Image 1: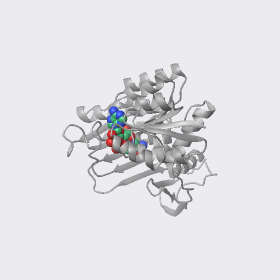
Image 2: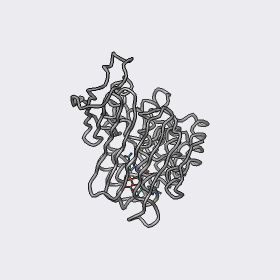
Image 3: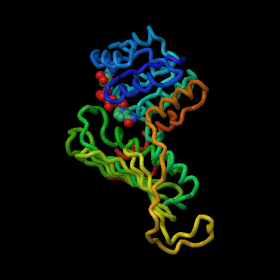
Image 4: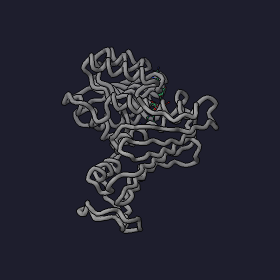
Length: 331
Ligand SMILES: NC(=O)c1ccc[n+]([C@@H]2O[C@H](COP(=O)([O-])OP(=O)(O)OC[C@H]3O[C@@H](n4cnc5c(N)ncnc54)[C@H](O)[C@@H]3O)[C@@H](O)[C@H]2O)c1
């Protein structure tokens, strides 16, 4: 049995506690939150001791692994404490407030030989997993464009990051994961409409080394929740709804068949619309299973500290681009 704990049991962390409670081979040995009432409520729901002081939890319960779901501005300080004690840690996204903090955490984890995972949960969305598999198989042919939409109402609880670092980091990670090529340039437009000191609307463009273009449309100014991806290639377009975990493929009838790779693409016309079967599961359960397996098998997790760092770097570049009206060519 591995001993697991959750630090920060607000809107995200309480779900980590629920999932650990249900995972095989794991015992939830405690939850901590500076809001003692929140800790007590989650602790009693999942039969785990609760703490207002996370250091006391670490001293008394000695967990093997921890999910860290406190506000982003505390990630570096808390994760450093955990890593220093030899505890494996899954840090909720984004990995930290700055790339320098992220680099420091990665170096600390390497020195201590602990697993450092980052909660870029969309990689565990079964519709994304199926989409990635189909793209790898070449179902869409050469990829021209990937478009991510993540639109939401304003979350008053997020006080320490703007919409690029907090929310678009999901989609930056997804673009990196699905295209899997270096970014050669990027440009962002940001707007502050509700938040007085950070952006709450973001539109971004990226160019990948192989030529594909990424389009990001992410904001906190939409009175409904939308999470969608479309990927357009020579053979057709995938449309993926990340909330309902649905995946469709719109065939380009004019495209040469998959076996006729030497033919030239002559045009684009509407073909069949194929609904692709997705085996649904809870992304968080898959993410925490992967983290626990990485600890048990001493292997890297699916989303490493380095992934978290690369994504944060791009997010920070987008914020800069938006502030300075500047096209950025990453080093
Ligand atoms: N992966 C996802 O889809 C996803 C979704 C939401 C949030 N998040 C991330 O999770 C983290 C938390 O976000 P949230 O939405 O759950 O916020 P939240 O405000 O709902 O929860 C944060 C919790 O941390 C507690 N906390 C604050 N300071 C503390 C301290 N010093 N000691 C112990 N506990 C402390 C707060 O009391 C609160 O309960 C953020 O990094 C956020 O980006 C990830």
